[in-house]
Length: 248
Ligand code: 13P
Image (cartoon, rainbow, N blue to C red; front, side):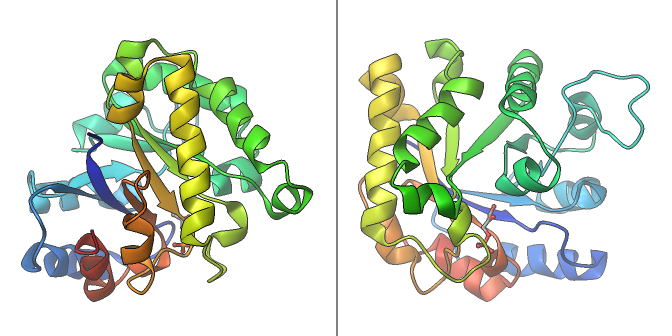
C-alpha cells in the first residue's frame, strides 16, 4: 500500500521566527504514526528546521539544481541541500513551470539528478484552467508524466511520490471535487500500472494539492486513490495543518 503523506509547501512565506513556531506547533500536536509529515520551507530555513524536527518531520526544498557544482549563480545543488538536512525536494510545481519557465526537459534532468544522488522527490503535475475547460486534462497530465518521469525503471519508480495539483485550484479557494480528484488519481495509477506493474502503481503515493484544507481534506483523503495532500495556504498555521494530518 502507498504511504500516506501530508506535506506543507510553504512557498515564499513566513519569517524565520514564524517558521520556528509553526514547526513547534506541529511537533506539539497529535500526529498519527502511519502518516509521513513533510515541510517544504524556504531553503534558507532547512538547516535550522531539520535540526529541530529530527526524524519526526521530513524537511525538504521547494527547488534545487540538477547540476553538481560550478558557475550557476543563485542555484543550490542536491549535495548542498542534503548537507543541511533536506531529504526530499519538489520537482515541477506549477509555479516553477509557469513563472520560472521550467520545461518538461528541465524537470526530467532534476528527476535524473535526484535518482543519481539518492534524493527523494515529489513530482508535481496538473493542468491549467484552459486545458480543463477544453476537456483534455487527462492527456495533458499523462504527457507531463511521460515527458519527465516515466523513463524511470520500475525500481526507481517504486515508492515514488506524485502530487496532482490542478493549476486552477492552487491558491484560488476552488478545490477539485473529490470525484474530480479521484478520477485523475485513478487514471495516474492506471498509467503506472500499464507502464510498470500494479505492484509499482500500488507503491506510489499520489497526493492531491490545490486549496486542500482542514474543511475538505477528510472527503478528499477518503478517496481510494488519494494518499494524502500537498498543502499550501492551510499548511501555514499549526491548527489547520494538524487537522489535515488527522483527516485520514
Ligand atoms: P494551496 O493549498 O494554497 O492552494 O497551494 C497548493 C500548492 O500549490 C501546494 O504545492
